[in-house]
Length: 410
Image (cartoon, rainbow, N blue to C red; front, side, top):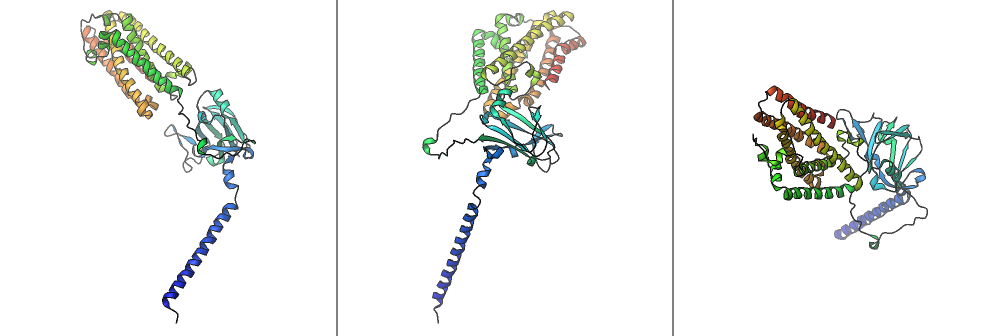
């Protein structure tokens, strides 16, 4: 009779041999399957006419559609947007210089770039667009591309960024000697932001040293809320003296810089795109900054002239200077706070700066309404004008410009 222990060991060895043979067969089948399709992985990396481009980026998952209830563009979802025939996306052409944009569809479509119709797209034929040419034409780093036509889902569209193959291109194996450190690219806006902040800090420091007493009054919240019946100081009664005029210019620079921080993300407030230059170079940004600052400074001069005309009609000649001083004083304090908040947000919380027009709408509205109330109590205490006439005066010089400004901003 065979030894039970020896029999058990023999069975185990036989089972292990069978398992090892099965494992060998499975590995062989997997390797054979992979080797039988040698071109599949290569095909995934090539796109375009005759697969003559290396795939750099596939926009299949980047499509957006306009959602009517939300009045905004939202990511495309097959189940929700299956009947849509207009698909859009942002193309960051700054990152794809020297590359090509490749389009293909079996449906009839039209190409829109930045909401402007460009051309009718070919059917069952590749369209190749040069990225460098698009940047020269539109002078922007990002393009808003829309495909509109008979397609009803994004699977019918193919949009890629490709790099043309070179027949003389040789395969290069990476090694440690080929790895180089590329410095981080600094945008023109970052340079503008740093230089602008530096200039504003210098301006405030200059005013603090050149006109210390005036600086103390202009940026004193307690003085802002104080109503003096006899304020004969030089700061109030000489609004266009050089020293006082510098504070108006400084305020214009501050508001202009804040305005640039808001519109840098393509927020067209007050339709300024019609008067500002297009482009994102440092020279263009500073040119637009000076234009906006000049307009704001001119608006304050116009404000004083309008106060002079209306005060003569209402016989309020004595309150012109104090009225204008309170406007500049309140604005200087408020917009300095806004400048500090936006500067911190730009560095630490960029999302707030990108949507600054939404976050600032309520504080700015409250500020102008509070300033209106302050002017009402100031003028009411300094004159014996009836409340009805005073209210009509303030409506003309303060409330109506505020309503018109909000209307144009929106």
